[in-house]
Amino acid sequence: MHPPIHKQLIMKRLFVIAIIALASVTANAQNKGGSATDTIPVVNGVYQYQEEVKVDSNLKKNQLYRNAKAYVMNVFMGAKDACQYDDKDQGRIIVKGAITVDDIKRFFPSVAVLRWDVNYNVEIICKDGKYEYRLYDMVITKEAHVSESNSRNVHLTMKDAYAAMPKQRGPYKALYPKVMNKLIAEFKANIGTLKENMVKRQPSYSAAF
Image (cartoon, rainbow, N blue to C red):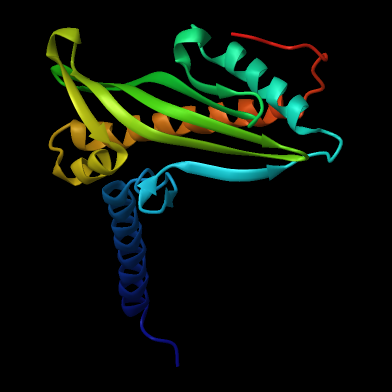
């Protein structure tokens, strides 16, 4: 025998309520956790991007070094000031970069803004048929809320920034992970540009800053 119609309706309603509750719990968990937490790799206890990349064996150290120089000149403004270390014999370059990332959250009747000025280093070591890169020493040097008049000089490592996320209140609880995600996107774009440049066939000349 089939259960009475009113029992079937009750069971259907309970099923719908359970689905809605599950979806709500999942959404809340995603909102609380955010997609940015621990996204930057941790190597030897430090947040940094590091990789050894194998390329065409015909690309020798000197060619890769020239590619690295071209990348620095194209990506970093004022390359002379940005370059911290440059040794052709070692095939090694260290350059300092800077990024500004921000985001905005509107809430009636006001608006919240979070902006970070971030410094970082990129190290490239060239060898025959391969190179290593490391993007490291990422430090937030200025944090601005709402406007420039609310900015303050800081020294926050990525570890500090991640630790500060759960402590945020109000609109900044959402803005912190959003700005971190934008910063991560900038870092990944930088690495992508590096990889594109490193496999190019540059003219055989001696580049200099």
